Length: 121
Image (cartoon, rainbow, N blue to C red):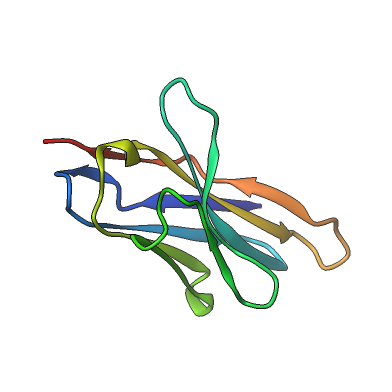
């Protein structure tokens, strides 16, 4: 099994910062946390930040220059540093991963349960 657990969310004032963590755990052959998504009330889930081929990163236009995605492979953890937060960043943030339970198994997609980020005065 593979479990993804997001943490680090909370209530912060505009202009503040938070660091989200996404930790992969369980029994698996391989796991690769791809990035972060978010979903605000009444809106579709959208990509926030992700790793792409070649080791590059991609960010939604709305967060460029403010958010930074990073990873610690030894800990199977991906982080999202969020600076200069705005009220429109308020959403539930989810991490996404691909992994294999066994070496001969299929690659599968996984989602965490999400962590709430609220930016408000």
